[in-house]
Amino acid sequence: MSLTDRLLGGAPAQPLITHYDDAEDTRVELSVATMRNWAAKTANWLVDELDVEPGDRVAVLLPAHWQTAAVFLGAWWCGAEVVTTGEAKVAFVPPGATAPTAAVTAVASLDPMGRDLRGNVQDGALDYIGDARLFGDDYLARTPVPGDTPCFLGETVDEIMVKALAHAEHLGITSSSRVMSTLDWPASAMEGLVTVLAAGASLVQVTNADAEKLRKHAETERTTIVLS
Image: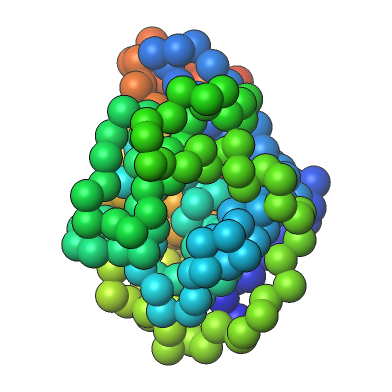
């Protein structure tokens, strides 16, 4: 079972990730079902369009964002290993960035409402949202992903889950928790994303956090745990 299967086991209508960007004053909420659809589109695109196979390295060089979560989950679903440095078959970057060590560069728009780049993509790069959104909302795994498959920075699916569940217990995160986090990814994706989802909790991720707005977010979203 892939890491994605283990992280998306909640009720379909349950809020999974709520993303705020305080600099842009935006908020978007995605349910388990919606996040699963985006993960499936990503996995289908990686496999069918870019020939990503289990064990291939996918570099994720994106900030904390719901699109980044979709990339993580899609890559893990098809058995790829997510990395942040070194060579990779595909690298996901923000607009204007480059990934010289990747065979393919995919640019994520990071638009809160999921709009694509509308043609504003550098030569030779792909528009992740514009391309992936055309693929199916379900991913039927071509090949099972064993627990000993490397999935994140050299650690296996089983190792990541054991670590995430232990950390969730240490932090007191349970399936009823609503966790607000200002931790950035990919550096803190293990604690700020995987640990939260592994526990079955919902995440309120705040980017470009503003102290005054954080207090309002905590009250509005009724968060129970803060990661910073």
